[in-house]
Amino acid sequence: MQININNIDEKEVEKELPKNGSQASELRQDIVTGDWVVIATGRAKRPDVFANLERVKDDKGIERCLFEDPVASGQEPDVLIYADKEGEWSLRVFPNKFPTVSQLATIGPKPEGPYFSMPGVGFHEVIVTRDHFKHLAMMNTLEVAEVFDAYQDRYLDLMNKKNVNFIAIFHNHGKEAGASLTHPHSQLMAIPVIAPYPRLELDGAEMYYRSNRQCVYCVMTEYESQFKERVVFENDEFIAFCPFASRVAFEVWVLPKKHSPYFERITDEQKIKLAEVFSKGLGSIYKGLNDPAYNFYINTSPCDGKDYPHFHWHIEILPHTSIWAGFELETGIEISTIQPEVAAEYLRGKL
Image (cartoon, rainbow, N blue to C red; front, side):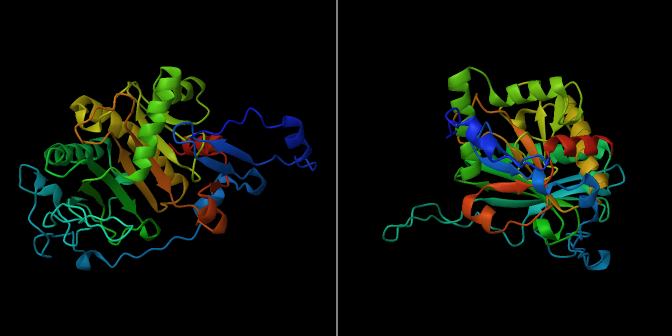
């Protein structure tokens, strides 16, 4: 729920502003979820400082990589494989050997006193690209488009399976981002429940539409495309920008410019356009921050059989540039030490 700030006394706030000429930090609100973030300009850092942050490098080497030859390392049989005319594979998808959720579990409630649980039923798959050293940020447009094609292929195959109501597609890069293996790979989890944060965005998008008769994401993309201040890159179909209420420094969103609730309905032509914008956005983070750890995920409508006309699918890229401490853990309010406008300008310079 959004907080009404119209009753805040501006004169009282003005009294508290610093008198030494430094710019006051800002509390910015996400217009979809109502979440607050702090843009801590009082502790602002120069953009290039983030490129010098110490990284955890944990590559055990290609000779010990489990994904270099998935068959030889005993991975589960492929459910999808892309290969060239010579039979050399470029991408393959197989069930996770150590799944978070399992097809073997049986659905059903498990009450315990005042608590409630259910078995972890679902599908957990790994999407692996061939080159051990070539991460997504280093790939060309067609290579990235192939990855999105695999995401779509597996989504379409799993979305109508029994007990699947939500599919998460995500990518962890770097040890700080939770990547246990350095070989480039994404993951897909198909589960029976809609996760809390996506539900918050779904509800926020519907609430905004009921109040304004407009899609909130369309409003954002049109505004950002018009004024350019936070735009990293755009083409005629997609846009990448640093969101106004960025949760972390150098956060980038990628959205279709035309309203679309469902990622899985993307066309082949749109995949090329998406890959171009996504590659520019992720590539600028890779170059500008010296290959930081990051996560990205596709936020699309659930596959639970219901319609979500108010939602607008998108990709959120979150570099790891800080660590949560007491304030963030207690309040859920994240602190960013660079303005999104400054971050976007810096990233544009790295294209």
